[in-house]
Image 1 (cartoon, one colour):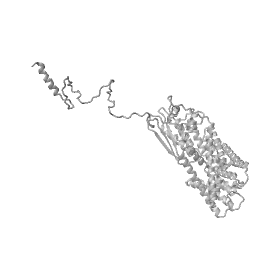
Image 2 (image 1 turned 180 degrees about the vertical axis):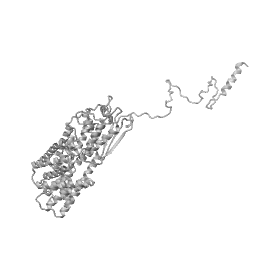
Image 3 (image 1 turned 180 degrees about the horizontal axis):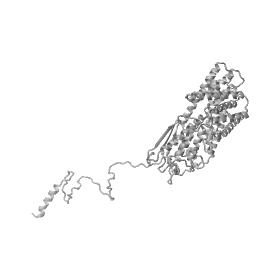
Image 4 (image 1 turned 90 degrees about the vertical axis):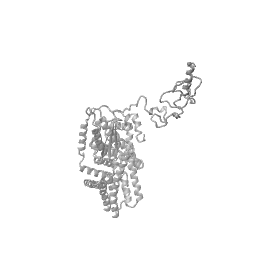
Length: 564
């Protein structure tokens, strides 16, 4: 046997002895077989290689795994998808490739309008504040700046300013010291402001509670002047200087003494009694009753009684004097005496502020203000009804429409409206420089009302609304001209329009068990009060048409109460 023959059986034996790692025995064939341990066993289906190179990446999906194809458009709500209502024509509604358009704020408009415009803008779109040098190199003291803005907002809110203007003032203070990413929040009794330096920093929040309210428009004007100086780029007021001026404003005494306020109450009631048909004796009686009520209210305030009881006590002397004159069979109109006393007590300032807050979107503050007005009105009702009830039991013959009998007296009534506005301005502690202007504004309001109601025979509600709109228009224009608050120019001017007679007739009807007629008169009083408040606010909005404000500001201002 040759060597080749000796080697052949050994090769066959090697092939028959080979076992694949998978446990399968590879049979021997006639051709030469691969003896590598990576050989594929017979019977195992192996796909044929394609013409292209196969993907060997570890991120490749295995064959046979079903994967849902990606949607043509991602569902709405994804951060990378466009809304369904998106179209190329509306591409300007989103951030353009060149960035957000610059909003130009006119420099010569009052700071209230500029700050209000930026408050209605998103934080990311607000123009960056100009560099200020009102603090040291380490930057502004954030807690102190927030505290200063809260103290200024407290004085404004306590003085009767609307919530929107209070927020604008707080934002102006923060922005004047370089804190542009701040958000003020105003409610009826709580002020809060939050500042976040950047999206990754923790916000700083401060709050302050408003516990006392006093209608001091001289202090209100001083606070507005301080905010105006802080907002002016040419006036450099340091933080310490701002605190010093704020402390001086708080320490300043009222511009009018107590006896002047009492005399103003008498003048207001006497002038109101002349407006509804009273004479000289009625003027004196109404003035005496109002002054007695004012002194009683001061006495109750010194004893710590709430304002509800102060209004109740202050309403009793005019009603008592009217009933006493009726029992004495004096030839006077007792209803005019009582009506004049009510004019001095009706909370017209709080009513206008409450309606204004509601129309500008501050519904919580508006509800609280209107609830306060309701409580004051109920206190007046209780005081007058108590006196009228005892007067009716004693046999007083109170004629419901006695105060409205007689022909209009234009000259006398215009003079009385001027005196009423003057007295109202003194009671509101206005600056002496604004008393004459607001007095003339009140006379204009009565002229408009008399021309429409007495001459044109138009309904009193519509006439009151138009007259109040004129008051609001003139008041806002004067306030913008002087860069001051509009309250000193509007609140006292609406005094002649207050629904004193309708309120009295409603209370008298209830006291005489004529509930239907009483409720009708009270409903008319409420309608007149709402007409005054809405007219003043509408006049204020119309006045903005005369101001030079950019189109972008008008567009954003129109959206402030639409929810977007």
